[in-house]
Image (cartoon, rainbow, N blue to C red; front, side, top):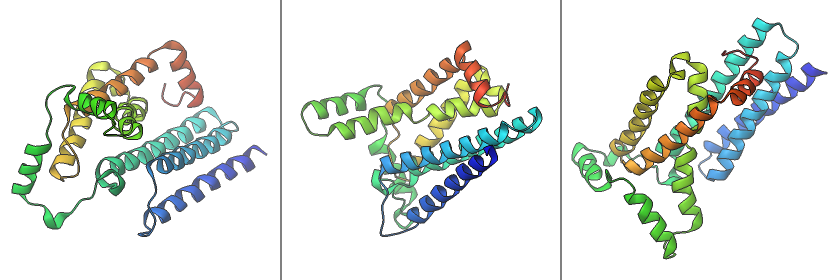
Length: 230
């Protein structure tokens, strides 16, 4: 019975993932941000539930082996979604045009779009919403979206790499990761190099990292991963 349900969840994961890929490659169909997030979260949930049910009937070492590969796959799915949102999603203005790219165009883009003044863009968005120049959805997409963007990274990266469980290594890893994405957006001319985005990304990551250090949360994490990363 348990194996049957596990196989069922794996099939749901496969069907949803395949459907997502097909829709992504269909030129006449555009998936919204909410749909992408919902589909990805459901796919990861089905994958986890399948592995959890299957692991219940395995020996300890087999459980750990299965859960390690499950969370590695979930991390890969997260990275693909993250790069899609930040670099390749036309709905978010991430449309790379190599035909129009040049060093002069790139430097001009960086000159116009780089913000190194803390809270400048946050204030612009808040005032824009106050004066009804932008919608609540646009405000939430920028502020809340950037705050939660690196939260999965903050949980999964230290889980998969023990060295990143030390705060000093974690903070440098996250900073380099965020700055790399911000630079890639500027170099590819698909987004802004914005210190406010960096601060919001970092704040969300640090919040999750701090929570993982709480004894109750760590104990829960060990249970859902069958202590595969302890």
